[in-house]
Length: 255
Image (cartoon, rainbow, N blue to C red; front, side, top):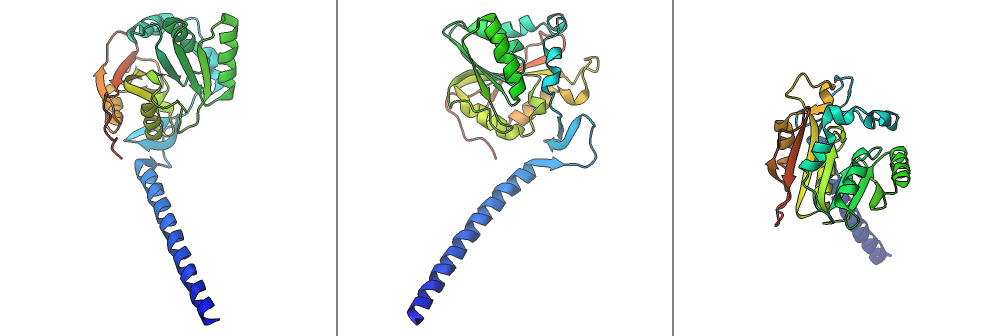
């Protein structure tokens, strides 16, 4: 009995040690997340009260705002055709349209990359994906794959994308660090990430402040990822077109 009791105590101590180690690791991960983001009780009514690198994250525009994305005046106001040209897409390119919404840009990208190319249209709202796929069917566009992402992961196949495009969406990511880590993993070496964001430097841009970003803030937030800044062509009337590139040899991103 004494031997059995002794063995039992040894096993119990070992299990307790393992459990403590797992709890410690989990606490460390949770602590890193808490330190990365700040929650404030007092915040902008258009934000979620969560801050990243000094910026409050904006509320997400829901699927009920899809008509605004498809408004007839959008080309005149934003020069969307010019924006697509600035991407310098070639036939056969694989593009990820992150936060694709109703598919306004998905459809234009699909035509640009041609039958040999592909567009991965990512959104977290199933209602938006339904609107998107219905419009694709009406227009006979077949080179698009709809993907329902999560708030931390767009679920792109690893090293599969030539260009990841985010049009007026990055500022709404509730987990911007985790999303960008996942997007970078989805890029091929040498692949590009493009942020189209309303210019916060310009008070005349008629958009709520939390739905605009400065070039400096975007570059600050990308500095912790394996990305190199390329350029910000000043060709659009209201928006930045901030282009970054994943190096051919990717170093580890900063924590």
